[in-house]
Amino acid sequence: MSSPEHKQKIWKMIKDIQVGMLVTLDGDMPRARPMHLVQKEYDGTLWFFTKRSAEKVSETNRDHDVCLSFSDQDKGVYVSLSGTANLTDDRELIDKYWNPFIAAWFTGGKDDPDIALLEIDVTMGEHWKAKESKAFQLYEFAKANVNKDATPNVGENEKFGG
Image (cartoon, rainbow, N blue to C red; front, side):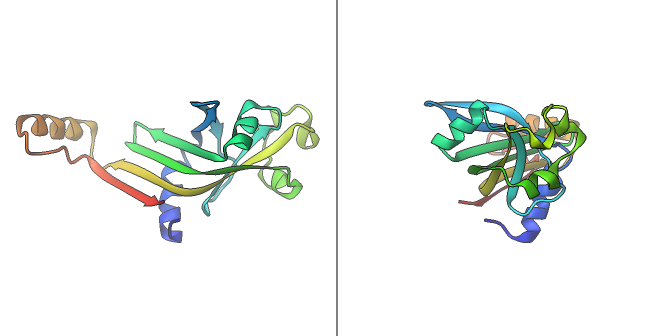
């Protein structure tokens, strides 16, 4: 778990990215697909709408452990979050997170019998944030290649939880 301040740091990194790649196990093989955040704040739980009939639902029912990755190459932001997935059809939460983007995917509206929310309780993660421009990062890589004892210093990296 992470502190409230750290959760805000994570949220600041992913809130504008909006789409993360959800990794589940399809049998023995990892499988990723894009998922769109629906919340406006982060408290350690991420929420996504899904169809109850989607393969990711049966995959998370078999193995609740999942990973989500977010990246914004332009800003040099990379976030990996791991946790447990659970399906809910809580009407209050569906109403709370419903929006026109989601409505386009569920033609039956909020009352579509196939609609559900996938709740991801984050337990650990890691993030990277480049501190400088791409040109500076290239300079750091070149410097490290010349000086074999040095490694590139391109920004922040932090693990949490677990």
